[in-house]
Amino acid sequence: MKRLLFYLLSFLFLTFISDARAQIAKSNIVGLWQAKSIRTGSALLAHYQFFANGEFVYHFDEYDDRSRIREAGGKYTLKGKILRLYVTYRKEIVGGELVQGSMGFQSEEIVLEGGRLIKIPQASKEPIEIDIETCESKEGFSCMKLQNNTYYKLSSNPKETVFKQ
Image 1 (spheres, rainbow, N blue to C red):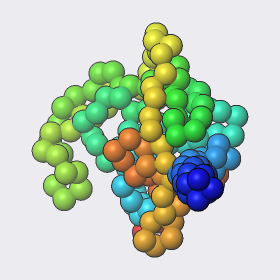
Image 2 (tube, rainbow, N blue to C red):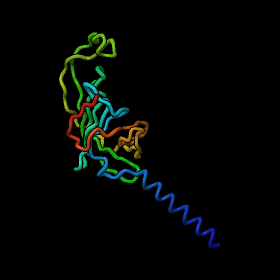
Image 3 (spheres, one colour):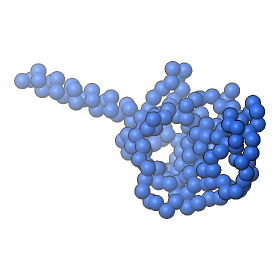
Image 4 (cartoon, helix red, strand yellow):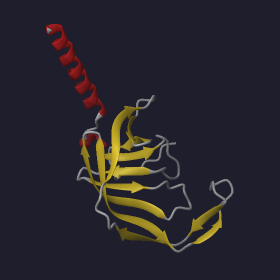
């Protein structure tokens, strides 16, 4: 009976420890996080800025020359393995023209050029709930998994613009 109790307590302890390691602390999420790669070029792939005051900005892939939605922002909370994003606005392009993409520079044949960026308030107050867990890349870079994507920490300062080749 004592042995069974020992094994049960050991199992619960190890489960708790491994569960705690997979969670990410709010202080560790602050920074600039890019999807898919630690490498950067003339622009960034989809990326988040998480601020210590609980605000976030999500930027859509800057290489996508067709998307009208460029960013979304608001507040975030982190509890356990759930990241809640309360989107309060988005910025999107209105107007503009579809033109031929630059050969060798833009990956698409047809791209959006011009227009103006406007800020649109979000009507819905429902949070977007995303599973979150920590990870570490083979190269030793901090990363986190958000739903189906891996994001790499480019900087602990969310305001920093980083371009690594």
